[in-house]
Length: 81
Image (cartoon, rainbow, N blue to C red; front, side, top):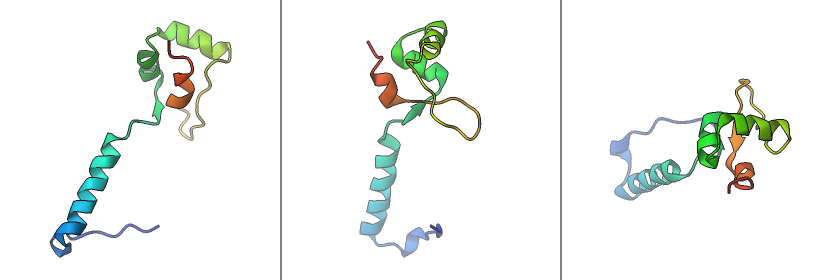
């Protein structure tokens, strides 16, 4: 899909309003993955506890091309007290 630049003066007020609503909706969506520190804060646990849970197979990182570990919120919800 190729992105095309938009000249705002060429849009109708309805089209401009739809673009603004879409941007606002996307900004309000919660993140789908968290870093290790964010995941610890979300669960209310220490990093040591998080590492123990990961070693015991309770938490699995998401696949990543960069090598950084991210964790899905859906999998963390199961462990949230």
